[in-house]
Length: 155
Image (cartoon, rainbow, N blue to C red; front, top):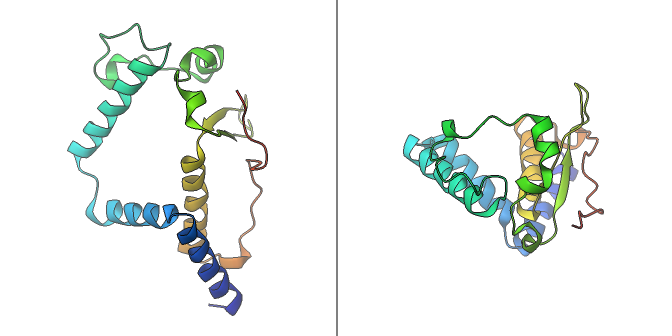
């Protein structure tokens, strides 16, 4: 490992610790899930938490209390999502703070954009950094960002 890479890693870890250590926690959770595995009970519980949340907070899903399991929910195409975008968003999305746009390039059709909060953005960046470390790209990694961190989505 080169000196610059060591310094970068140390500086990154110090910066992460100063900001509350979110990326370190993500790395620990990711490692635990890989080593210990994710149980079926865990997946089922998390899925039901998500389904209950969207039924309570998304105008698109509110009127369908009969949808209890994942297979009860209709498959939504990209076109359906774009057409019903305002109804799909949860009603408290404005209260979630600054939201960031993540977009696909649309190389296979229509570009697709989703919103994420700062934690999800940090997780997205973490996976990129962790992947470059895992595959030993180090400072040789090159990336074209799909998100302009300076531009926040204002509703």
